[in-house]
Length: 111
Image (cartoon, rainbow, N blue to C red):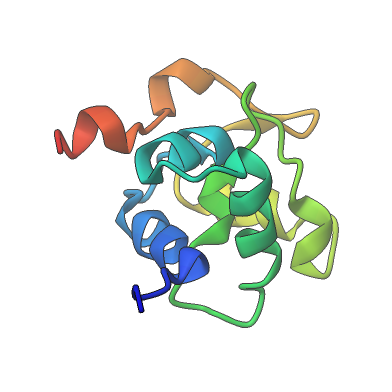
């Protein structure tokens, strides 16, 4: 019998690699991990890690830099505050200079 992949743990491993002050997207992680369910699967994983302080879920945003997962942080401004503490500027729930702070494991990890 083939070993079953633990997709959530694979997602968490990638998210742990996102450097402070940088962000990545659900879809980018999905492409890196070749997940069939794509960005949705990464979103489910992020929704399930709210009690995992070792996973910097605040660094994962949607494809245009919007803090789409902010409601999973308990309070509406927690995700923004965490990113701003790392030097990421946020305006109207969106990352400012998104392309500048975007982190792509497909490029950065060169695997």
